[in-house]
Image 1 (cartoon, rainbow, N blue to C red):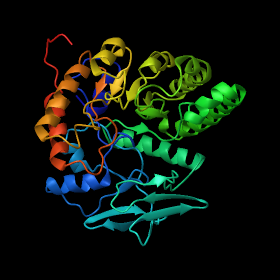
Image 2: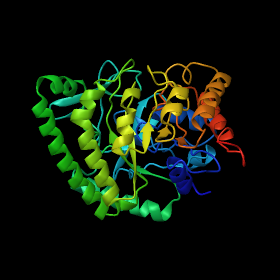
Image 3: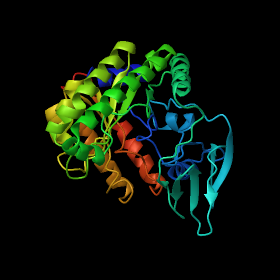
Length: 380
């Protein structure tokens, strides 16, 4: 079975030969450039041109040789930056970065990136930037949407892997400040989301007519959960977010053939019925360590109605710190739960951080692949 077909069928809860595997299709399913360097070194692969695709989280583009090694069914949509230069962050770690990125080394070993009055900082010895979100772009606005649309069309013709437009649309919730405004200034929230809906539909149309109507999925970014609970009540979600989500998802399905991929970290179980009712196809990253996000509970309650994209290995307490065998065990236990009834795409919970040992990454993906196959005639 071809990769693109495998992913679409898994999302639709149709039978597949094995569940699909994702690494790096999205800026929350990827790998730190530091961990990626170590992984390539561990596998005996060249480390000469590791490309930084996310200049905030310091994520690497996953190359074809690694995609093949781990049987990955997905690929990043984002094109390479037009002009790249090498950046030696520290020691052996040299990455290709966009020319306009220009991190400035400080006397204490920190790096600073500035854009007007905004700045972000990579601490000495750190793995990602904090502060303002100053992502490097070659294009912005409608030009960027056309670029991505053309790229989606070309990749659909040239590659069999499934891909996703991400980072362009929000899920009509922007954080805890908006949750407070829902209680103190509700009209402002509705006005903002009405305006956001119109703007996003406009950009969606530009993407679709540029060739993006063939893209595999379109992501909505809407971090709604903390470790212990959602940031807002189901009642507030229903009033202030759900109507706009539903209308925008209807537009996505009118103008494209894309599946809808919702990224929301944290404890979001009480909101999942609203995601399903709005038309969300996939939920990521499935933070199984958060309150109420037990894998078996999620699969039992919602597994027939939504695809779980993630949740395949605990990245908070297992992947970085445990032995390869314990990583294998955790991956096997979680994938045994999520693979039942199809509707599952393997990925670890969020990105692989910079300090994760390469042997643990290999253990996770090898176990995921070995456990991915469905036995013919078995009752799934």
